[in-house]
Image (cartoon, rainbow, N blue to C red; front, top):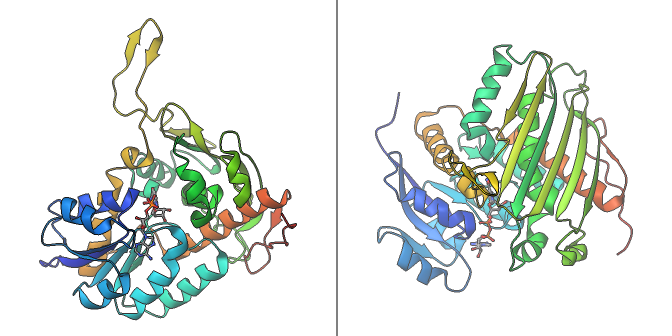
Amino acid sequence: MTSPRRLRIGLIGLGRLGSIRARILQNNQPRLEFIAACDTKPGAEKWAAENLASTVKFYADPADMMANSGIEAVLISTATATHAPLILQALDLGLHVMCEKPISIDVITTEEVMAKAASKPNQVFLVPFTKRYDESYQVTKKMLEDGTLGEVHAVETHNSDQQEPNGFFVAFSAMSGGIFVDVGIHDVDIARYFLEPTKGIANPKKQVNRVFAVGQQAVYGALAKTRDADNGWGLVEFANGKVFQLHVGRTLTNGYESATRVYGTKALSAINGNSAINRVEVRDQYGVRTQTTPDAFTLYDATFTKDVGEFAAAVLDGSKLTCSAEDAYEAAKIVVALQHSFRLGQAVYFDDEGRPILEALPAQ
Ligand SMILES: NC(=O)c1ccc[n+]([C@@H]2O[C@H](COP(=O)([O-])OP(=O)(O)OC[C@H]3O[C@@H](n4cnc5c(N)ncnc54)[C@H](O)[C@@H]3O)[C@@H](O)[C@H]2O)c1
């Protein structure tokens, strides 16, 4: 049964992604009523007055918005390091919660959030992973399910942002958990989606044997201060023997690219080999050229409408979600391990409880 009413929602965080969420939420969403927005940064109120509908009330304090605006659900689109306290507060206030990936920048805090979400079974909790809402990934998943791909045994991804001349990535690094955590979590999640790491293993908790990562500061030397990289490569060996290889980056000059290859015994699916903005090819004295998407927000624009729609339907009608909290937790452990491996210069192994064994880093 589909509920006829709309879900009253508030948005916290009006930054790069939050401003896109705001545009989508106020664009005649059939199942959502966008009534409140919040950001703590100076100038946010002015931005809200100029860009949000008069029916959306602005708050400078997230606690005030969550307690007093009349919302039933909240979409958290703030810097990653601030997600966990906001999620915990929202769940305690009885709100349904959708939060951008990742839940946190570390495993222990992620576990605290998981426990709180599990203690509130009547409240919906969604951490959406963009690629799962993209048509090409869904088509590939169907090919896996109907046997077209055969046995899927490996996944490779490339995911790289365009260079940012103002150094956004350097300032962003401390709050994002580092490149493997921030960017790589999308790729780890989609690898798990195709490699089905719980299938064929004796201990369902231990889904990963080991990971190894390397990285470099090819353009942004200042990232060394936060032990971060602008290009990173990682290998993940799952306990079921399947293998995932990723490259994450921040230094492309043509735009944003994100490609995935899913290797099956009968077929290979190559998704988005060219992250072109449309299907136009210019043929001139330079050869054949396409225009690249400038950023992930453009490439995946449609997914940011689909996931909020799914969230609303889950609250209003009790329908199923594409991404579970466990998916977010499992992906979080792997990206934290990759980031740590890069910082440590050694492989990181997983224990029988499925947690990465994080040896102390040498002093910097
Ligand atoms: N799914 C995707 O493809 C995707 C893409 C980009 C970003 N993200 C995620 O979205 C989140 C936001 O990323 P962004 O690029 O928009 O970051 P951003 O830095 O541009 O924006 C974050 C905003 O949150 C505000 N903020 C921070 N703490 C706050 C608090 N406690 N209360 C209220 N406002 C607060 C900041 O003032 C800022 O305006 C991150 O967690 C990131 O990982 C997801």
